[in-house]
Length: 254
Image (cartoon, rainbow, N blue to C red; front, top):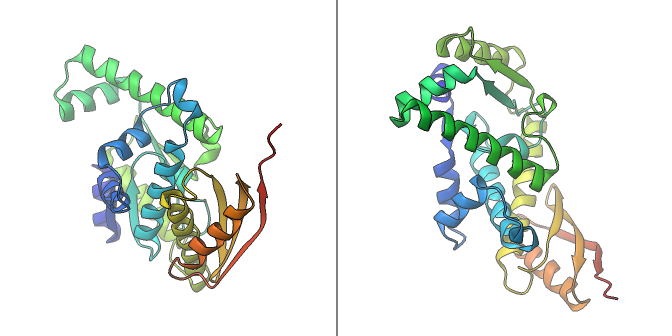
């Protein structure tokens, strides 16, 4: 409701999780598995699996591709973690008292009160575990956000106007510098996603940075020969002009 109001107020595109999942699935993976990777906390055994990293790489690539031209509102899990804070990104968290959330769950999901309470507690616990596992941060930490809005005393319309005012006041527009930053992030995310789905490199994990067509890739490889394969995949990604793989190092097995 708030996201829809804000999109109408600002004239921005509204992007939800389903749009991102659909775009990410175009890489050739299951939408159901992508949703599960974004929503459910890992079990003990999943801590040793690589698949979640791959799914998140695909989701980040899809998200950055959707928002790289600006004037967009994304409402979905982990948007504030998948996108860096900065001049062109306003990371906003909406909070509300438990009774307010219970009433909303009952209205939108047609739950009984007991079902609504159980649902809210489960969602909060899963989000906290998810962000702690993947990013080592507390989902509720206010420092992860630029703006926190409490709906206890604000209506949806008032909250919408408050956020819209902040956007206009801070000029969250894509200047040429901001556009370059987001284009770099989108390119780095595409390279990371391509490496995640390419069979010879899909078992590896990387950090990728990009600047005006030049990408730098850091991480560990299983064999020295894989370094050339990583560079080849990066250079075949549209938009990449140079690929620096000097910081790739072979794993040491004792």
